[in-house]
Image (cartoon, rainbow, N blue to C red; front, top):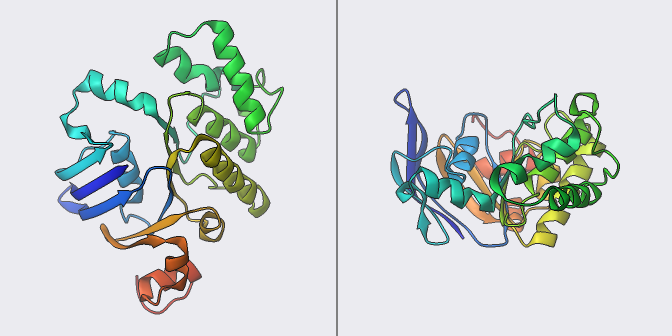
Length: 246
């Protein structure tokens, strides 16, 4: 379980998150929505311990991340996988080397075990035989798939974070990526937090939704509750209705 307890964060005296209380149940696929600069990406980075709150606590399965020292946090992160908005792939490395990167850094697996795991992940994202290709020559959708494979390559990963997983993709490829993310989540039983501007497709796979607005969590509920909500802000983002200024 991921729990935010009155979490606040500011940059240059401007509040990015303000007194956010949020609980993401274990095994939930949680979608974060809201306008730009609402604090969505900052919240996701806090889950991974990449950003610490100024006030409040981020607690994961009873562990307060702020209480971990550098080594403890690094060891704790073996539970996490993350797909960044720009994929963060190494263009000078092959697909297989990109996917193997976390295993070589964080495990003592043999090269045979690593290669077996890489091939398994490539099959899971429908890219068999791509291990020797350079990432620079891949399409946008293929790069996203490689990013998903790398984010889920660790056998210990039970929390996965996706920041704009369909950014820059055409509608068909975007739908396939979201279906892949849902399949991966179901197969692993992982807890997933996802940020996406592609609301229609994201809401087709989420269990719960949170709406951040000006740094505050103004809605938290099931996807069905979000779609049925009469709250003006929720209606604007879920249904694309413009009832007033954001």
